Length: 229
Image: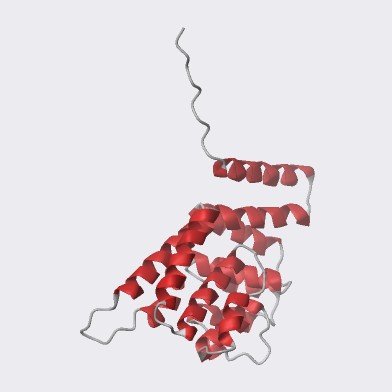
């Protein structure tokens, strides 16, 4: 999760040395942190509320590129959960104004790497881009070398989008999401594992895990009402 924050700190916390950052920057950072936590946990309503607050805090500045950056952070997080919907929130604003680094990151998460300037990407992804033309084992090692779990899942999602994955790629992503207790990406990767097929025992184990995670999302049952006689 730390890397997600690094992506926004350079923009949102860019106060001059010796000066306090404006309140909106701290509000945006806190809201993005909450959004990240809620989104990965599968708390849809809370995630939407937190993102709206983050976007509103940044939009108060009237900075088109800054709001586009927030939208790009959201798109990257969606990739971590295998949501490949177009990044329209960013692209509409990028047509007006963006930064070279954001443009490169947008290309990166789109999976279209032809002619991309990798030096503009966050450092943790440089090895992945270089490994993309090598055997799948090299790609998997490059993903595993990414320390931050959010960034690791984003990398895994991009390679799934590009069709460069195997059973080991999926299992590593499942293990990452499981270790963090992140239900949304865990369910999507388990679902993809199920679609890939396997023997009866393997499929039964995957389906059992899916049921457990789904049950954890359900609200706790209300205690039965006791009526006095």
